[in-house]
Image 1 (cartoon, rainbow, N blue to C red):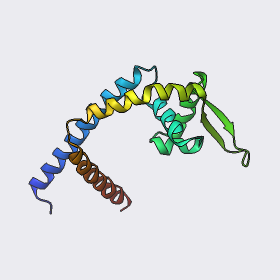
Image 2: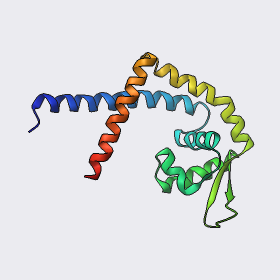
Image 3: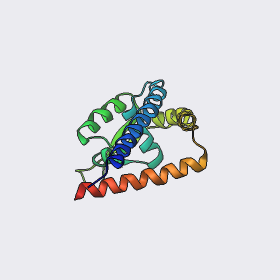
Length: 150
């Protein structure tokens, strides 16, 4: 049986992680919204900018978004002229999202500011502490993922 102190520490860690995630995400999202993009639109553009054309069916999994929402986001970005749909030459069932020149230009302008904002938000930790946090949070995430399977 788990002792009370272990349970209390686990609950406290969960709350601390949740609050830190919320505080950082809220500030990062405020930064993104200055560029007339919502966080999901930004995530799709950033994915395409850094990774190239992506099948629409796979974008949701890469940016942690429900697949039903991808069509809506892609429609909005297409309407803004920031991405285009491109049919796959080998498989007509597959459609790719492709960042346009306007989308590339926008990301070239705003990504350095976004990157700096993220750095500023995480400046409360030294580089070594960030590396330790990365290792510990990854370990926690992998364990939680394996626990779900049981």
